[in-house]
Length: 148
Image (cartoon, rainbow, N blue to C red; front, side, top):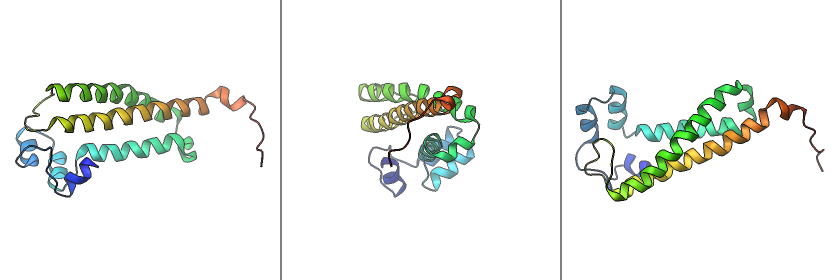
């Protein structure tokens, strides 16, 4: 919601000035600068990709993909995003930042950290479920018949 608010021109929590110019001055890749100039935050795009990935873990069409192609990034995302998000939620109100974070409100770190941690936890839960459902042992487990 925060990124959507910013995409529609909201400025609460952001530093003054043009973020695209700051990204460009700091040597960010051209695609990130272009996205910022067009109201797209790269982390918001990443979150959309992650939601599609979560859908692949829980929907039947995801089973058509090679098992490793969901397990490896699923566990990697869970194991990196969860502690990163939790750490950010703790560090932001204490004034600890990474990189050039001058001008950002502490609540932005808390909201962002909550989003990262939530995504990491969701990835962990869904990846574990997918791993159990698609394991070779699960194929031979007898399942009770439907009670329809």
